[in-house]
Structure formats: structure tokens, C-alpha cells
Image (cartoon, rainbow, N blue to C red; front, side, top):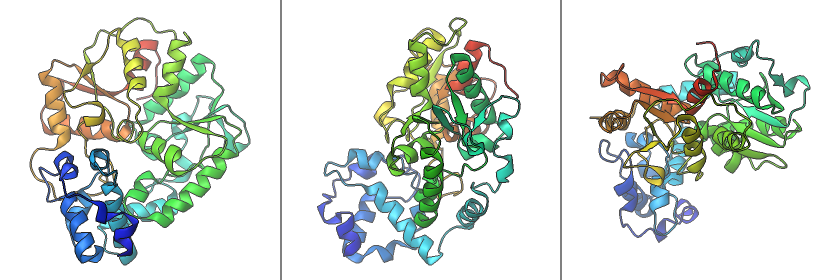
Amino acid sequence: MEFAQKFELYACLQCGKCTGGCPVAMRTPLNVRMLMREALIYGVDVLLGRPEIWDCTTCKTCTLRCPRKLEPSEVLIAIRAKLVESGRIPKNVIDALEATYVHGNPWGRARQKRTEWAKGLGVKEVAAGERVELLGFVCCAVAYDPRLQPIAQTFAKVMAISGVDFGIIGIEESCCGNEIRRMGEEGLFEELKDSNKALIEGSGAKEVVALSPHCFNALKNEYRLEGVRAIHYTEILEGLISQGRLPLKGPLAKRVVYHDPCFLGKQNGVYEAPRRVLEAIIGTAPLEFSRSRETSLCCEGGGGRMWVEGTGTGVRNSEIRVKEALEMGAEVVATACPFCLLTLEDALKTTGLEGKLEVKDILELLGEALGVEVDR
């Protein structure tokens, strides 16, 4: 009953709008409405053996659609927390959580290599005692993945071009914990939050800019930062472009469609900034998917799904997305999230669309428009 009261399960109308909008409901057994009902009637413990608990991407579509303003996505996270407590979690999740505890990132990469992407760029590090006005929170994926490192390198160079006093935490930066919490490890999340929060608030920065919407969500909504405003990188780029501080060489002649990341759009309402940045880059408004903004089709990369295979069968959402892009005549799918980038690029391979369509981060397109060169 305590669980039911905490999440107000008794207020659920069983209208089905949550399941009707769930991006994985069509290809997995996950039925959010039924989970809410069963947790209320039988108690949450009866749900702990359900493998579909790990299918949820925590995209928040169910929460946005709920007419009673309940939070079904938080119910799923709470169920996972009970699984973590009991040790009944997939091995890949165990490995990711243990790696984060030991190394500060879910891939188990050495902390000393967290800033290798920044070598030769002259980026300040506040952990080394330097002070900055704008502090960059890099994201584990961007810091370590060779495919994503150019995104961080481009951002650092763009900040230098625009004259922004920019720096990063350094090797002391740990995982933001956004996915850790959504995999159910609340205790580890709190440790990561406390460590990062102290570094951010002690940096002297007025703003902390995240290169990932997942980090942005944690910093903005879950860290409760004092004296420091959390922003996503597209928001500062929008301002710099409007101020004329970025010398774009002219519009890129590319047909670009924008994919809204769930943790940037649905979770935090940032819809206009990435579109305005893209419009400045290509000289026209980007193409729009029929499912965009608050109805954007989730790529299935969030909620710990980077480490959990899931029970889904059939065509993945990311595969649907790239096929939609090709059908509408796009040459590039642009996004502003490293997880979306990786899942959509993988979909190009599985659908045989490599060479017919590209997936790029907005920063990569901006780098082209500015003539910025980075290591690849």
C-alpha cells in the first residue's frame, strides 16, 4: 500500500493513454497501464519477475499523456530499484553499475583517459584549479567513444571562436547518473550527484552546459544546483548565433531532418533552440518528421537500454526513423543526443541505408559550416 500511495496508483483511471503512446508497446510485452493496475491490486512485488520491466526507455511519453498527471515512468524506475535491492538484475546492468562505481563511467574506461579527447585544445580544467564562466559537462559516452569525441572537440573549438570563457571539470568528472538512476541504482546516483555537484558549484561558473540531453536532465532536474544554471549546448549556440559571434561560411546545401531526443524535448521542453541552430546552418528550416516535438518517436536508447537487450521483436524504432527520413527526401538526420546518434547510425547499418543517408549531431554540422577541423 505504501508503494501505491507514493505513486498515487489509486488515482489511475486505466484509460490506457500511457500504453497507447508507449514507443515500445507494439513490439514488447510492456503494458504500463496493466503494471499500474497490478501494482495497486496485488502489490509491486508480483511484478519483479517480469523481464519487460527492462524494456522501458523512460522517455516520459506515458507521463506526458496521463490525464491525472501521474508518473508511470517513475513507477517503472521504482520497480527497477526494488530489483536492484534484491540483486535480480541482468548481468549487463550489473556490469554497468559496477563499472560506474569503480571507474566513474558505465563502460569501465580509465578515469585518467576521460579528457584525452581534449589534448592539444587548450581547454581549461577546473579540477586543476582554473576558473571559468561556462563549465562543460562532457558525458561519459562523448568523452570515451571515438565516434562521439569529435562532438566535444568541435564544441571546445566553437567556444574558443566565440570568445567564451569555457572549461571542463577534468578527470574528476563522473557519470551524471541519469541512466544509473533509471536502471534503479538510487544510492549510486546520489553518490555521483554529490561528487559532481560539489565540483560544479565550486567551479565559479555561472552556467554548466551539457553535451548530452541525459546529462542535461540530471543536472537541471535532479541535482538541484545552487548558483549555477544548467543548459543544453544547443541553447548557448542559439544565443551565440543570434549575437553574430559565430562566423558561418554560408548555408550547407543539405536536406536535413531533425530528430527530437526524448530527454531534450519531452523531458525538458527544448524544441526551438536546436531547430534555430539548424536553420542558421543550412539556411532554411529543417524538415520535420510527422512524429516530432512532444510526439517524437523514441529511438529506444534511453533508460539504461544501452546496456539491456530487452524483449522486443520486429522492427526497431530507430530503423523506422531512418526509413522515414529517406522517404521524405532527407540527406541527413540531425540530432542533439549521443545516444540517439549511436542508435540511429546503427539503424543505417541494419537497414542497409549506409551511403544513402547520414546521421549527424548538430555540432558536427556546425563544425562543417564554420570550417572547424577535428580528429576523427
